[in-house]
View 1: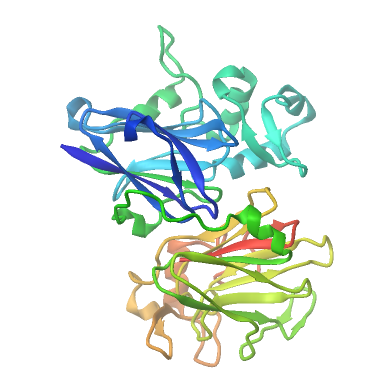
View 2 (view 1 turned 90 degrees about the vertical axis):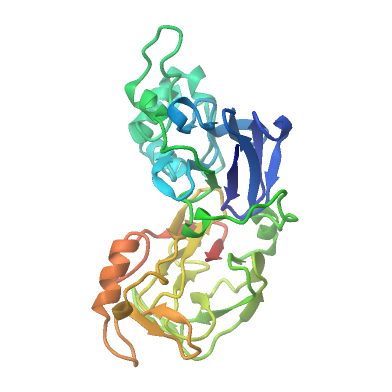
Length: 408
């Protein structure tokens, strides 16, 4: 009997993976937002390894239908890291292994590290011109690097070599090799941002080869200030940009009636939208409310960088994320569907009949919807998106005045 391994790339660029044990040991290149399907017979073992500028990084290690009829899966950073990856059995998040925000946690730890730690890791932690970590060398070759990574990822991923050749290894590493739940299809998810699988990935459409590559974030950046806008739905969508009427110190005059521009993005496609550096407002799906808002400014007065966040205060018609494109790895938002399963008390339908979640702060249609507030707090939380109030949501900054904005 055979099962499938689904390799999904949630990032905005093509991603190459080494494949060991399947696919005739041939590498695969998975397009932005696409899934590649690998056939994995019972009893087979192997690994899916992300490549970063030719260097091996995070890897999903998999044994299909092993001892006791169970799959054995783990996520390892022993040979390095340059992105985020998780692995789990399809439809069973309890089996998930890996830190979905490994690189963000790595960057946070690096920027907090004292001078002695940074000097000890100088040769194995690779950074960009802004001192943000882009890649680390094999942890197995650098004891100091292993100790450093354990400060933020211990128990989340395989860090050391584990039990091997008479060595007992690290208990938290050894626990990564625990059995999963029977014999099922496997989901491997990669992203520069959050590598938590989307809900829709529970039953991905098999794909024997990736779609034709889209323009990468890096190539789209040559357009200058603006937004790299990606539509993750299978159908064409319109997106409306609203520049605020006025802006103050922590306040703004929201624009509800004069979108400019309004753009169309084909299903599972992306588009670069150039914007003036003076733009300060939002983009949303269509022109009707309720809608998820991606709020941003292209050039802040204090540092000249773009700054942005996700807001559900005027409703939610689907998930959205915002990510930097300057190499810093900053990211916020959410990628899972919270609309279809929401209680009816939290729902308000758009004028065109589309189901959405109601406002959490009130507008001309009525006051704050407490059921929507409670549901969004449980499903998303204030840190990932503004639900109520003007604090508690992480700001995303991009020094090059360009964001990647994804609508799901």
